[in-house]
Length: 384
Image (cartoon, rainbow, N blue to C red; front, side, top):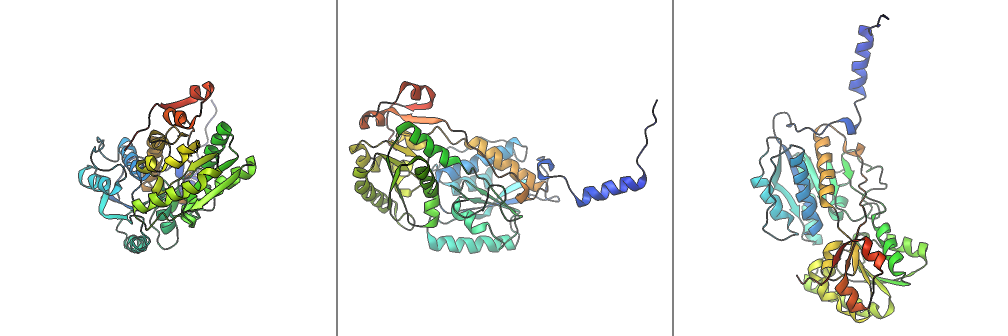
């Protein structure tokens, strides 16, 4: 039998020192629940304003954390508006039981899409981060991502549900957030794939879109992706800019309608992007000019807007999958992982949703093979 040579004491010491100086990569840090040296980890939250995606992302992140054992499993609340993350946050803070973490009731900031409130909340949030009142902050959406992805604090930050963090200037690449304390969920080709799919189906020559004339709004509206695909495929873009933030919902709808009435006669397809005037609950109010001119439409909001009248979109944004992604990141960070080292890419699978009542109104007859691949087919237009 061959004699096994055991490592020397010097070699063992060297291996231990190496492990201390060069710890395992983030992916190996583990997701098991643990306390923060005997006390609960405190989580905070910043958003630009109410948005359905933010509510769903927060809810599914909480569910994801419960499935990882960081808190008791729970039945989601059935009350409140589907975009009211504040109400959900308060419910989580007061209801959820966990020996490991808490949703800090005094660490929630929402600016209601108002510039002045945004600046006030940004300063208040960063002050709280400097004072280490929370151990991790959820930066929900583009505004929050822009406000917290910087060197003005060092608290671990997860930027969630931002429309296009690269185009918005939150990060320079999908591979690196640029800050040790920051990780940003992204899919650099999410909207490129949607626009290409819409063009594959409709083969339009002039595509219209509406957005506010600001850098953040252009990112929400996927303007750069629209320009990229337009150049690639050889179609023309017809744009119209209208105020979105700092106006009432009624004025946002009126501004959106005014734009549509202007460009509808000039286009043969329309792309709905994130805008208060064309939110799911307002979709039925702004469709008239597009229906009148028989314009096929795509919404980057997903299936919720197909239900309320957009012709097509992706079948659904799988918030359960996103929640699991965010929850794992939180668990890894609380186990010692550096946010910058975490994988930022969360690639969404494209599935098609189509509204046959909208198709009937505009005179579009979807090919049989298109209906075969559509995962969600609606036969009427839902009115909120």
